[in-house]
Image 1: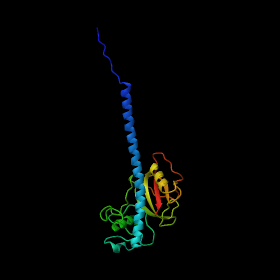
Image 2 (image 1 turned 180 degrees about the horizontal axis):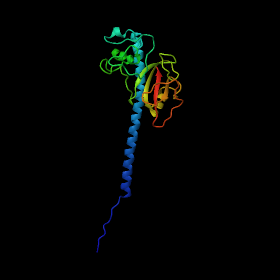
Image 3 (image 1 turned 90 degrees about the vertical axis):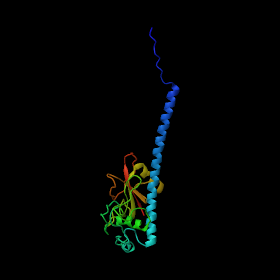
Image 4 (image 1 turned 90 degrees about the horizontal axis):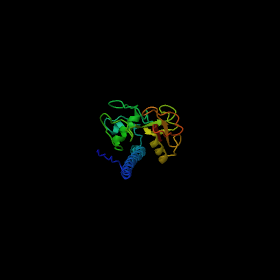
Length: 224
């Protein structure tokens, strides 16, 4: 007579425990992702505010615009001066000449002057002393003069000196605009363009509205 082996399955209680554990794990992962997103939103806002404060402090101390400062070469040994015309030559995303940027590369000199003055961290000599910093998502942060006529660059209908930050994911871009301006990509002191490539050049017209697809990235620019 053969003895049948009884197959023991999971009880309803055991299945319920497993489902609870899976739910807790998924909840923790989603919560962690949201915390990372919130931290990046704060970092982008802090970048914009910090650069604005450093720019204003430099002007207060030296009565000049960093990058455009015509007296910088006399103040710091080896520094390159700007032309002092009240504008920043060059685009926010221009690569600095190696080993030293020229007087025509004021968008790079901007960072060098601020570092030499001690208003922002970073090297003051070496390979990267005039490079633009990067934001919390790895995009470039830079400055340029906005406007229609050279040496200004078309910047979404804005004018004057602007700071731009690139490669900003749609969810973060929307949150930054909501928390610091008017929630619109096309109006206000902060405007945006939809990127077609990383660290994209600015264009004349801002993107009409933000679209949160999970894949879109934007360049945000704000007046200084």
